[in-house]
Every structure is written in C-alpha cells, then in structure tokens.
Image (tube, rainbow, N blue to C red; front, top):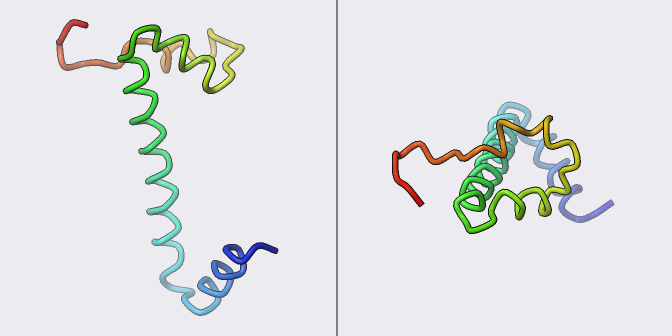
Length: 77
C-alpha cells in the first residue's frame, strides 16, 4: 500500500468527523480543475479536436454538451 493511502487511512481513523469535508473539498477541486481545463482548451484554435484527443472521446454524440462552445461572455474569437 502506498504511503499516501496509509496516511489518508490514518487521517480518516483519527478524524472521523473531519475527513468527509476534506475529501469532498478535494474531489470538488478536481472536478473544478478539469472543467477549467476543458473550457480553456475549447477556446484554443482546434480546441474541440484537442479535447477529443486529450480525453480519447469516441462517442461524439454522447458529449455534444461538452464539445459545444462554452464561452458565454458574448465575445467572438
């Protein structure tokens, strides 16, 4: 077992009332980071194809919402 997993297991055991909040914040930060990444990537030249390649997307119809332009600021380009 890796050292990180052991430390996390120890933290959970020693902090039964705290670990869920810490865990939730970490997971939410991962989702936020991923969303910022693909939104910025879609703004790049050929960004849609770069996103498809980065995530290995095969079913384009299943990701239509993700692959559409997400720039809602009204700017062009």
